[in-house]
Image (cartoon, rainbow, N blue to C red; front, side, top):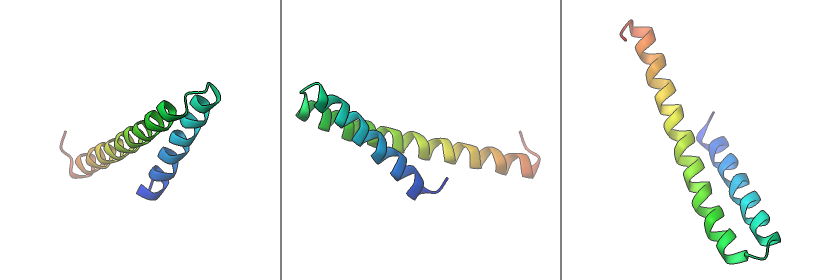
Amino acid sequence: MSRRNMAIVAVCFGIAYAVASAIRSQLLAGAVSGAIGAVLVFVVLVRVGEHNAEVRRRRRSGGH
């Protein structure tokens, strides 16, 4: 998954979370939590991608 796709997923998460909170009349809290959640989702996706790439490199080189 490219970083652009990761960013799109993170933004979609943030928007969905903010909208869900806005429906419960917590607009500001939802917007802040959605932004923090979007950043967290992006960071996790990037880290998982880096980990998977490292595992692939180790397997190709024959190391464990």
